[in-house]
Amino acid sequence: MKKIVTLLLVVVTGGLLTTVSAVESVPLKSLRGDVPLTEEPKPPEMQNDQKDHPVEARSYVQQPPLIPHTIRDYRITAEHNKCMECHSWARYREFGATKISMTHFKDRTGTDTATVSPLRYFCTQCHAPQTDAQPLVENTFKPIKSIQPAK
Image 1 (cartoon, rainbow, N blue to C red):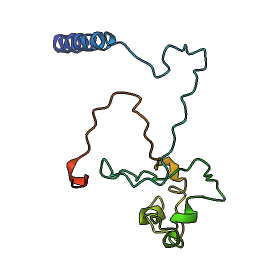
Image 2: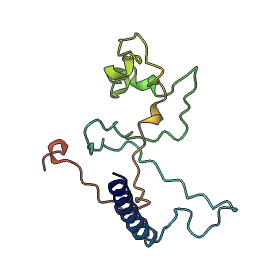
Image 3: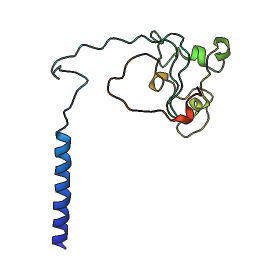
Image 4: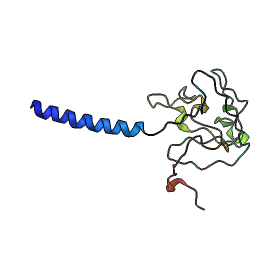
């Protein structure tokens, strides 16, 4: 039995060493560029939010919708949520906005509530403004065909 366990350890360890060696040979590239960790890098320029842009198609199921307008000066605090001025069920028609989803009125246990759940109150945790920024890293993601608009 000891011989079998020893043999297995040698085989597994040898395989791990080969894997680690292969990973170590790939050079790492940081988004910080050549700036050392002891220095503060220059922040990237802020992207311009697209103003009143048509809503983009979603790329995957359960993707939160992107925000099709600028939110640069919006503030969301415990006392006030600027997004609710237009997207609340009481006022969305007045502004021609999309009303917030029923899922935003469920608590941790899935129980329906009369107000927006604290879990969903801070909109920008999930929703991001549309922008024409280029990806920071190479990306080969392809959206699923079943949710793409017909051309």
